[in-house]
Image (cartoon, rainbow, N blue to C red; front, side, top):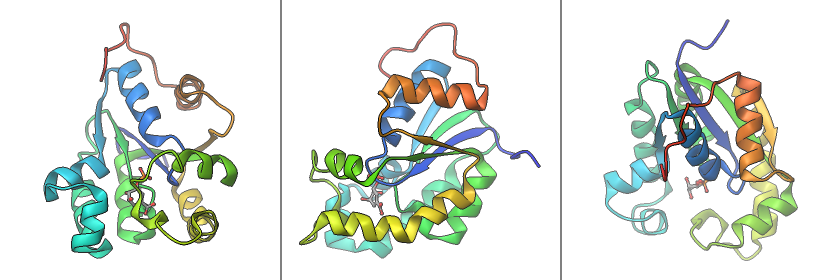
Length: 182
Ligand code: S3P
């Protein structure tokens, strides 16, 4: 059965290019974009590292689920999610109800190289982040796959190639004019 919702939801591990792809997708389709990480930050009034260190991961996950619940499945939107959102069964059901689910993947080396550019991911502040990535991927890979309608490996694609591929596989038309800086 086709997904009832009208959203396009991007899921995937940290460093698979979800945020950039979502921004570009919003620009090229004219759709409004919802970012669950940004919604959590807005709701709690502080950055993700502070949320984890001051309130704990549990608080982050509660507000993340609440954010997901606020997004309507009836609108044609682009929804981008944090990498750990699939760990809750409740979130997986909410995501599937929102619309079509795009799972972005990348090989471990690429993920490690990409996440190493920024120090804003508390779950990777470990003695051996490379190993943490492997372990989290092992726990989560099947969860992403279990709710995905399509999967795009971004390891060797540019941002615009990722967007081209998503629009092509979902058969979504481009807007007549590209929205600047969305
Ligand atoms: C997390 C991924 C992050 C953010 C938080 C937790 C995770 O989002 O939600 O740091 O559990 O994988 P990105 O996937 O956008 O980095």
